[in-house]
Length: 457
Figure 1 (tube, rainbow, N blue to C red):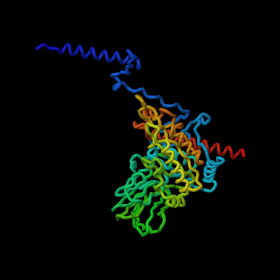
Figure 2: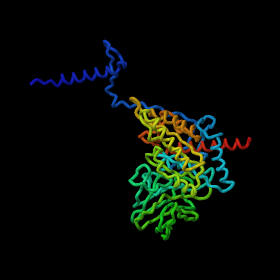
Figure 3: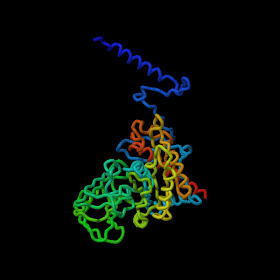
Figure 4: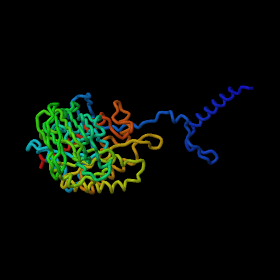
């Protein structure tokens, strides 16, 4: 039998050369009225060109993993920054009102508190850990403020060591049936038999190692029992008395480094979270809910929010959502605007008279044609969110522009060290540090402007 292997190999080589040659033909070339499609047989193995990250005037000195964070690490030319808080309130008085409360920290030993309703973009204290710590360096306060009972990212969070066991969790996004009494952070937790809970300070930030006051928030109509432990000492029994309202178990002691709780019996006792703090200063309570587009906040009853507000005292409400509404099309912009309008009205009912800051969606990368780039709906959602803020008299911050604009998330993901995950959606801890410092710089610059205006009045 004749061997045709040589001819077969020669034909395959010739075919390959022909296909490679076709790759050099310009797209759209017409032969007898027929337009040729672009052909590149190496497209699957050829590395994609990545857009360069947008340049910014911010220069960050990245400290080591365990180094303290200080405002001196942030160097920025404020004249060129161009991204500050926009005040769309009547006579632009909301921002001034907030900074007047900052003044009262030193003059009246006041505690300034920010309720930060967000999504997975700030989960695990990404951005907020560095923002909080930098501003606490400037204005005082120690501790992370309000923390949940359980968390999907407890091991990811650096601002607190958090362990728990045997809890049933309900959230406004992952609703497990029924209509449980959600707390201010959008969750409610029920202890199962031998439920355990432990918090311990960390040295990752300057102001997260210890605190002097802890508060456990709960609601029950009859007495319930628990035991608690401070700094690894003896377990102490405690009765949580029944009351027809949001109640608080409070414990004060200087230098609390860890606190643990045990609930021996399964109970229908709704527990909402714990606050860890130390003295007057500024606190950012992170109410991140994964998958939250904003609309689910309607399940937090205004009466419940006002009850927590009476206990905690919020001076600023932040709404940072939109990431889960970003798509590769513009079909949902009007629908999402209607949802945000309802969400804003709901927050105004929950916190009457309080300034609300809307933070726009940040950059999100994805496939744009044959390359990677900013998803088409990102700028449209940012513009829509600014419009909602303007129509409702809110404060507004353009996070997308602050990050660097189009292509930034791709550049962040390819940076060394990586500032974003390869999903081109979420920041790493290093990226959170960069953006936390940027946002802190915005607050500090706005406060300087406020002080300057007061001086010249």
